Image (tube, rainbow, N blue to C red; front, side):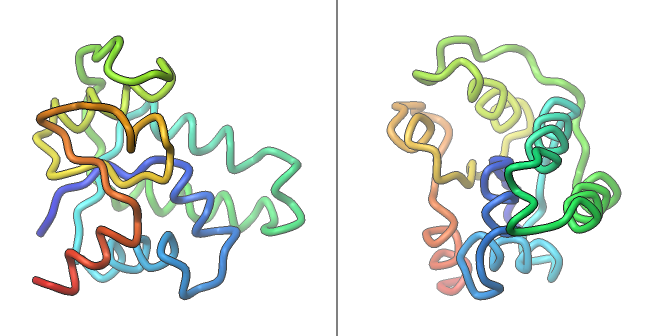
Length: 139
């Protein structure tokens, strides 16, 4: 099973998009035990904060957001806060995802965030949701 860090934006996209969208399929791959999702308290806090923003109510209600966050809290692998990876990306707010991936020897970060996708991380691969799905289909 592939150990991955999923950017909170992918989870939000799964809630917004259709059931067959790549982000929703990444969530399905996790539910089907095809990937292991690694999270930290910081990732969970960001996901909760973003998912509960009123601007998303036109796509999903608060109950659905809380359900997904709760499922992630209960079933993802919750890791301790990793050491800092300050300066790993252009956006300091993304550096904790790199630190989590490095600290837990994750195979990759799954994200649509350009700051992560374009970062030269060397030891951490960053794939878009569709690229992860392609990799899973090849296995």
